[in-house]
Amino acid sequence: MNSEKLKGHILILIANIMFAINMPISKYLLPAHVQPEALTIMRMGSACLLFWIASLFTKREKVTMKDLGMLFICALCGVGFNQGLFIVGLNRTSPVDASIIATAVPIFVMLLAAVILKEPITKMKAFGVLLGCCGGVSLILASTHSPGQASGLTGNLMITTSAVIYSIYLVLSKPLSLRYSAVTMMKWMFLFSTLVLLPFTYQHVLETPAFQREVFDMKEIGAISFVLIGATFIPYLLIPMSLKRIRPTTVSMYNYVQPIIASLITVMVGQDTFSFQKALSAVLVFVGVYLVTQSKSRADLEKENR
View 1 (cartoon, rainbow, N blue to C red):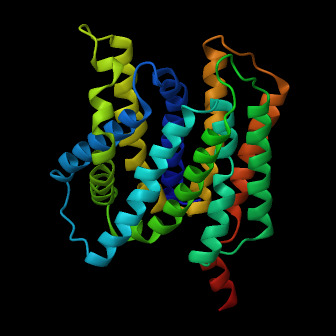
View 2 (view 1 turned 180 degrees about the vertical axis):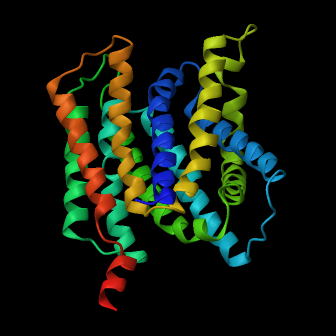
């Protein structure tokens, strides 16, 4: 593995650690502290502002009208509809169900990459995705639903739709990530997402319980700040940077790291215990990720056939 590919793996690992930490924090905020629609538009708006500010300190890139149209589609798939459906869906189901559904993302990405990018589905890649999926589901099933976090069909359908359209984003944005910087891509994507969602969500921000109190709760503010910066701005900056260096299927495989990180956090804070099943699940995930990274890409196969 060369240094650029290694950098891509490190970047997407950090992004998924941020996403993993975000799940329990978002569940804490919803809906008693922040309404799901309000949290969604706050994420869009704050990231939009931060990326446009960041663009002032980076090289200006001219984006073609054709690519702006593709960025608009990516904005809806990777940011607006994806995050909106996930947050509202999480409010209507359990974090356990949400995590299980998220394990399907690499399968969707592998199939879409084969259709759109003509990436081959090799036996090694398919087996790696299967191993990772088994490891992720096994780890999550070791958990139990907490009281008041019952499974919900509507919420599960929303999160499934979110997973599918996020997969579409990972595949469609790959060519764009090779032409533009992460900041350029994200500033346009979050601008489009904010403009589309703002008319339907701004009222929810005004009615958010956390902003109705005379004295701000610092725990609430800290949690909101992490969601806006740590779980939105930073990960979405890192995803296109990793896509520039590694394949979409490999990027999506790091979704399986999220339940592992969440499990480690619960063990560290004394909410759960370490077990052999969790260790075995983690091994399956990492072996699955390794096999996908070692599988041959379309470029590799083309070189062999020359």
